[in-house]
Length: 169
Image (cartoon, rainbow, N blue to C red; front, side):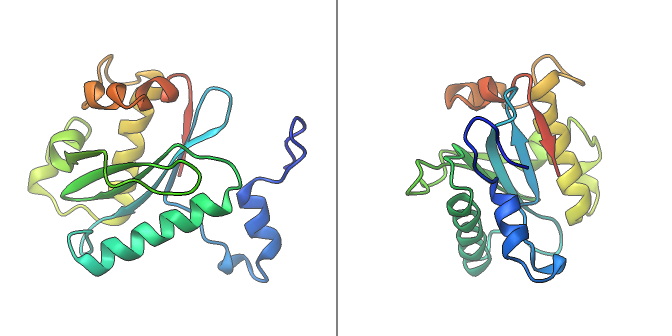
């Protein structure tokens, strides 16, 4: 789709045009758009048996985030890594990805959407869905007027951007 105001392709469209096979197209696990349909957050999610506690896995995931952010050709202000232990939020300025500006305990946040989070094995697809539920709660408060970590996300300006937006897995 071409943005009529800017006459540019989105980074997904560029990736699709560059790919020789549909299997070659690589996307983040989760994308959040603001109410103007601008991308404001991308996320990589790793459920069991993987996690970002391993240095190599975290480094590779960060490199993937940077690759997505650079390919976007627009500044996407936030990026996130989520595993069953931690939610890490980063800022992107168009050139450099910050160190994590927020580190949250995943179970503390997502147990609002899955009360048995501490008791279950949470695999990738389910963790992605729970994360999407949490982010969507900031967009249109489907579950709670004050989603978990509201204060932290407000302090960095993310919750304000999410208000009225949508998520896309």
